[in-house]
Image (cartoon, rainbow, N blue to C red; front, top):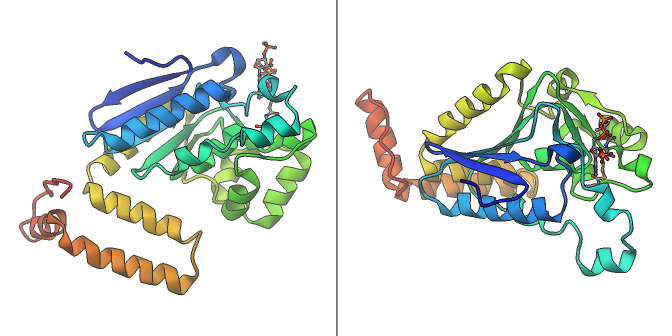
Length: 258
Ligand code: CAA
């Protein structure tokens, strides 16, 4: 049973499935959703039995953005004093892997949350966009930065300035999503992918994630050094011995996370 109001959380073996659940508002992301996601992701990170997480929405909307009705009356002082949206950084600090499974609208904050994931698997119905300009504002949860990293300046600038939506096929071609599947197959595909990741050595999963993310923060030389040191460090783990022994013995690895 989920103890949350705006999200559903269930464990399927070693995979945590988190479903945004405000259908009446197309999963618009209000402060309650944010706090519940912070709590659910922290619980996932702390639970050694859970090895991958999938975040999804509904068939119609992954999330249609931050909750416009919650923001409408706010002034600068309130937004600044509360560091509005600052809490999303806690979600991005999740150490273990997580995937966004996106069908339907992923607009504004919805697109931004999807881009916080380690990667996105999209249904062919998915539509991504940063339409904040139509509301007289800009992205505020990292969209101007993560979209630009993902698809490059030309498309990111065009999308932010026009607010247009990008379909799933274009999103895959542009590097925004890892894979597009028929809408009916989205959850099977996302869970299957998450189970494959959950079957890997847990420390190696965290290390691989840390390394790829380092590419966005470091110079090439620093990033390569970081990679090599972390690679060396894994030779102090039991799972490195197990993984390489299992290969030689032609059997699957039996991971302990140590
Ligand atoms: N915030 C609050 N409520 C929202 C919402 C949002 N972002 N998106 C949709 N809803 C609500 C609608 O107000 C409507 O509620 P009522 O039934 O009470 O009127 C309900 O969800 C259903 O929406 P629609 O009737 O509009 O559904 P539609 O199928 O006709 O249109 C849509 C779908 C094109 C996605 C349209 O809802 C839409 O344009 N939504 C807003 C998209 C947007 O501008 N997102 C950016 C938000 S700002 C932001 O995210 C800032 C940031 O950087 C984080």
